[in-house]
Amino acid sequence: MLNMRAIIVKLDMKHLKPNQRCINSQKIYGYTDSSNHGKYKYKRKGILSDIPKLILGKGTFVIKYTNRKILEKISDLGVNLHKYEITIKKLD
Image (cartoon, rainbow, N blue to C red; front, side, top):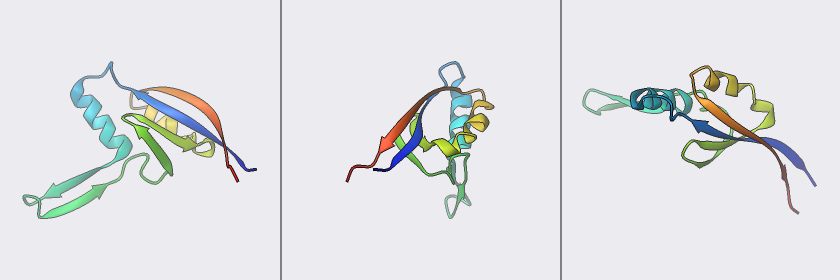
């Protein structure tokens, strides 16, 4: 049986203004940018773009415990994080 340590993260941005919530979400998850009236599209990477993750819902995701350092970058944006360490067991 293989065990993997992981962290469930819940983002809390209630204390921020709506425009700052949008900007932070773009910085965290990334977004698609377009120019010339939608003729060209560009994928803008966010903090979590290159990290393997499982998105559970709005503002909630699971990452490997080894990637926990990335949470410091998110916290630096003024986002409150609620973190729960879990162990995932692989079933045969």
